[in-house]
Length: 140
Image (cartoon, rainbow, N blue to C red; front, side, top):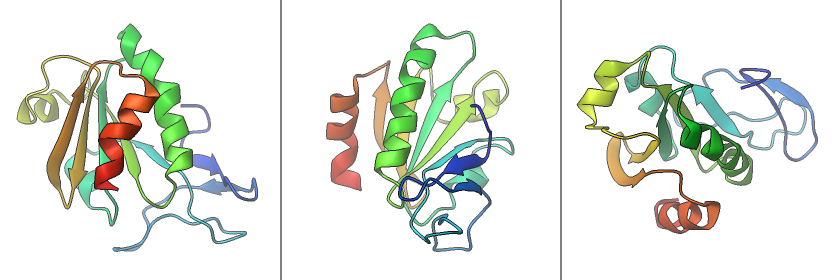
């Protein structure tokens, strides 16, 4: 992801560095205080990323996976459109094989939506955006 951990505010365009917000909060723009798109790479594994006040959509992916590259821009759009309501975590299965095994991910891309740390929805394959929205919306 270009500009890793730096995102532009959807409302005012200000650039913000994504950090870990305090418990129970979502990242907000330093300028206008509106929620920011929350899209991060899992660098310390999955468990710390699931500690969020909003549902967390985990994208199990790999650099060599063509369908994973197709779905990446859709996930970026969803992060912008659902700012303040959804956190998206990209987890590279080549770097985190234990998480892949723990969640029984056998094909990628696999998207798992977590609510309160528990999986509530699983989508396997590069689904089109309308289908992703249809599957996610009831949980947001």
